[in-house]
Length: 275
Image 1 (cartoon, rainbow, N blue to C red):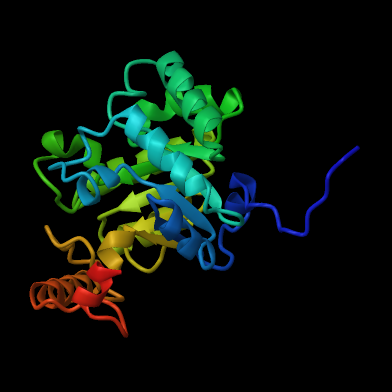
Image 2: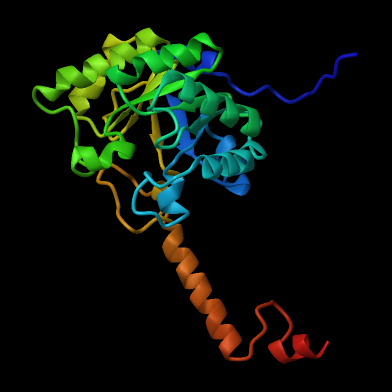
């Protein structure tokens, strides 16, 4: 006996790949179940990004993020997703050593979170690993340009692909496509290079600070909501200032409690304590 449901199935990596040159692909990160439910209503793809190390755990970079952290947050987000394609980042150190290492860790992430694909950073030097995973049934999203896990080697969060470096980044993206990646994130590139790569490869490009010429766009949720204030990338548009709103609300609550006012619509603090 088979079970049926009225719910639409999640979008798959194949669905995202077919969006090349079609309607722009809407992507956001998410790290918790409540936020996943919100972004799922509007997004085609939801990424559990290793940016969670910085925006949720206070780490100075994504380098310290662990497999356990990615799996825990991946499980939380999966509980809130019903329609978007769910992708989970592979953390630093979980895939670089060898293709078989990458397979073991990618398989664990997919098995324990229920996500449909993983994302890993790196260009030409990661093509063999991407091919190894794809050949074994693991969909992979690539990531070139600024690769935050390599921030120490790159000398900071700088724009990539300027001058002669443009050819290298373009080659990186092309090799990931040839290896079987279903989409490629382009981070912090000159807009003209983002447009060029989008025209040259046959899978969707997902831009983050790479111009409007990409096939889709992604932002870190806490950046676009104004919840993460440690730094603000120049390319990020804040669609809300929820951090300021939350700070004001917390201060108002603290003022009420210190003044003996119960933080409710009708009862005083003293009445509440007495009942």
